[in-house]
Amino acid sequence: MLDESTLRRHLATLGWEAARHGNGTFRTVHETPEGPVVVYLRLQEHWLVASVVPFLATKGDNSFELSRWLLRMNRDMRQTKFAYDEDGDVVLTVELPTEALDFSEIEAALEGLVASAVKHRKTLRAAASG
Image 1 (cartoon, rainbow, N blue to C red):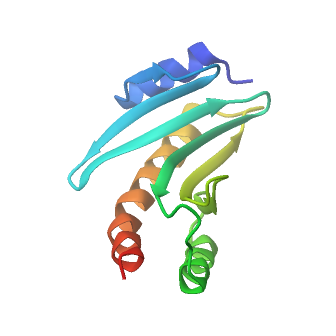
Image 2 (tube, rainbow, N blue to C red; image 1 turned 90 degrees about the vertical axis):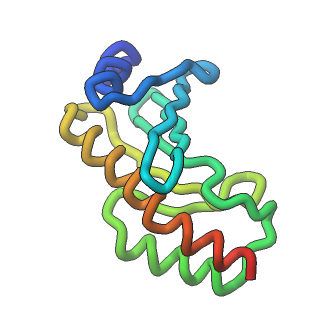
């Protein structure tokens, strides 16, 4: 079972500085050539949830075309998925069961999350602006 100290150690190994952001949640900023990607990591009883929130701030004004595009991308991505949060904004998230989670799985999931964020950020922002 993954605990907070092990998660912090794994993040440090990846070079990600994690700051506490509430109970059981950490905030990290991952620098990329296209700009920073802010990732929130929440350790729950049986899950590690990492999310880019909001990935695209829309305040619930989401077109049918955007929803279709998100579903197509979800089909083609492995662990990482798009969703809407309670404000109607688009989030990008990955959820990992913690029971037998090891460093390589965390590394692959977080690298995939950031890669997907970089890949799709420009496309979604252009589509949202019309």
